[in-house]
Amino acid sequence: MSTVIKGGTIVTHDLTYVADVLIEGGRIAAIGPGLRGDVELDATGCFVMPGGIDPHTHLEMPFMGTYSADNFESGTRAALAGGTTMVVDFALPSPGQGLLDALEMWHNKSGRANCDYSYHMAVTWWGEKVFDDMAAVVDRGITSFKHFLAYKGALMVNDDELFSSFQRVRDLGAIAMVHAENGDVVAELSARLLREGNVGPEAHAYSRPPQVEGEATNRAIMIADMAGAPLYVVHTSCEDSHEAIRRARAAGKRVWGEPLIQHLTLDESEYFNADWDHAARRVMSPPFRNKQHQDSLWAGLSSGSLSVVATDHCAFTTAQKRSGVGDFTKIPNGTGGLEDRMPMLWTYGVVTGRITMNEFVAVTSTNAAKIFGMYPKKGAVAVGSDADLVVWDPMREKVIGAATQQSAIDYNVFEGKRVTGLPRFTLTRGQVAVFDGEVRTQEGHGEFVAREPNGAVNRALSTFKELTAPRPVVRAGIPASGV
Ligand SMILES: NC(=O)NCCC(=O)O
Ligand SMILES: [Zn+2]
Ligand SMILES: [Zn+2]
Image 1 (tube, rainbow, N blue to C red):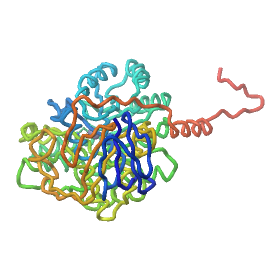
Image 2 (cartoon, protein in one colour):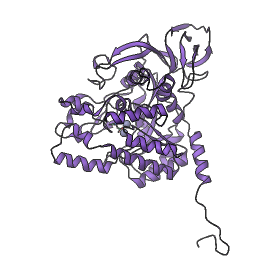
Image 3 (spheres, rainbow, N blue to C red):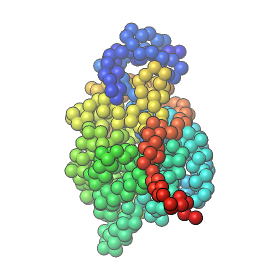
Image 4 (cartoon, rainbow, N blue to C red):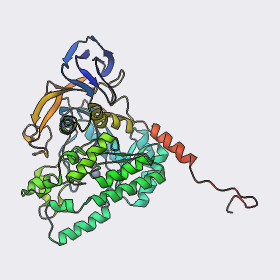
């Protein structure tokens, strides 16, 4: 059975043009005028774009003594409802656990996914076993490794471990990733705040000022550069971190920054709300920042110094958040956003003129596909690409609210926001998961996407590092070897 999307305007990261799209066997079979298919989807007045890719989610993740509430079913249903057709989740070994073990656990959860997915692997401890497993993980199509510089005593790695892991990442042709906050400083500030009676959710923000992020971002960039590994910095929330990324990129270092839709559109005033639940529901790391930091992030998207907008979707119910009453350090860190990322970015980015439609496609889809080794299978409207598509109706509106959302939690951090621009249709490998705004997902339809190592950036960086590597100076009459 074939499907044709008729009468729309195709918008990719670099082109905008009128054409129909024919889909056969889950892939794009033809693009052009006057195409016919068994099923026709009317895209009149709409933009036909690559479905969104959210490269930063935590579905059913064990964290801070509980599990994030959205699993691969509800999480990917929320994704599709908002025009996102692929998620990349984080497989998270507990300290001492092998990476392949963790991978097995994540594979067991992801069978329920409604759309395609992949994983990044977290490096949460260091040893020979991790070193060996990293190669096996890459062989299985997982080519990115995440490191936490925060969460001291749990997920955090030290600089020597970071440098060792980054060198392994380089040798495997993979991408290094980092959660950049100085965990030692956060632990000290948190303890002091608690001692002084600062126990509410606002203290979470006080404990993680922009400096802890700026310092850790710069440190990770320099360590990655010395190791020769390309680096992706997740949830860049402030100018201090953005500045380090911008400077590194201008100096030719291979670094990407990822702001979240939450940091772009919600600010620190949320933590001062008189309602404890309201503030705690918004506790995430890094915390929301002020308007100046938000302006910096928006400028990064339009200038190209920041590359991807993600969600870090890690949703906890109000009941889960309440385990931190009386001690902000026990509030599970994380917020939702999967269903809202694309409509919020369109409304606050494209409609306001901060970014173009093509930039919207780049930062919601194509850049992630390129960075993480799955372009043009994903992130493209091209013959042969997977038919992961969104038919975007720029006139469709709604007010975001927990009552109508797909996520399993009981609130929405964007509650009450009016968005303009929503999917008319969302297709996952040709299957219509959203039809005229109605969600028709199919549990288990999603497939694991194996990714390739040794992308163009890895190859260029290795060549350059090899060319500029330290070499001994040969001196007449002095033996070359030290022995
Ligand atoms: N971001 C957050 O607060 N929770 C999810 C885990 C992480 O990415 O740090
Ligand atoms: Zn993080
Ligand atoms: Zn995260």
